[in-house]
Image 1 (spheres, rainbow, N blue to C red):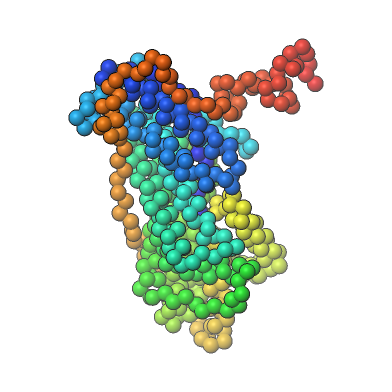
Image 2: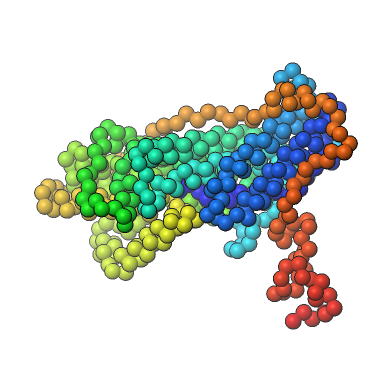
Length: 480
């Protein structure tokens, strides 16, 4: 985790063709220039190698923060609102037309997400703010990647700092998605594309809050770090002391995990009302729900083990395996789990995930479910060994324990998002008419994809030919 969002790209646009302002004539030109910069930044980001995109996220964030205040002024001018003491009047010349890539819309494997044409400034605002929320989630993902790597283990201070920064990024993403949910509720007609539809925005708001809640537990959860150290080939520690977790905190962590699972479940339910949404998002929400419930069972087991109820703790761990979606812990399922084929398959899955973490690409797409399974497996082996040699405590069935799990407990009180606006002094300067020699910067980057306006292919290239080489076959009616 977190979910690996793909940032959308957009085509060129000149606001001067659609808006006019008698009070601030330079506003459409300035807004077009900032949008052109953002367009170039997004396209360059998309063309970077996946392993290099995380380092480019601050550049994308800066371009978004520069452009969004101009959108706020345009929106205020169309609505007849003022910016401080500045009265802004924006007149709609003709209906605004924009196009964005819908990165959350389902598409065929190997194809770029579809490019959709939208009308109205509201659609532009929703897509731009959604992109800002994606950037915050990806920043959190980049901050957490260092904690997952088995090559170098972070210090406790580095771990706390990375988790705290990621938590703030998740909360920023949640506040933006929640704002968009409220804003999209004012639409009288359904959204033209699923990425900015109310069900998807609701699901993303629940997803970001679930991740922010779950990461609050990770800050004080030492067991994943112990497992990561155990996988570290450079580690020379052959034995470790079990981390001490106070009983009350273990129970609190379990309640927080259940709250995260409830948010993920609500997001999964609301996403069911959306059409043509990428299945990867639905799978991630389901995996996140399973991971959160598995963590809750683990902490209930830790709470029981600290109370000298080792048998009940082992039962909770087996319940965690059940919640995580792995093989059961009794009867034929237990025999299958211990079989050579099952172990080989599990080892291969773990090695593939470790390689993804080392490369920094496509890791954590299971919302940490495999990683939590490793922690549960480590604790279960240890406690079973202790119980067989020292405790001899009876292990009860885990089904009745799962039925007694309490409701979740909220950890965060998210702050509402406020659409940023330009400083009043900057708005005042735009009262001056634009220089006739000045032209708005619409972007230098070429569009990409078969549905772009400047694409020479236009879907009519001969089958098997390189895109854009249609003219080479102009003299032949039978290409092959």
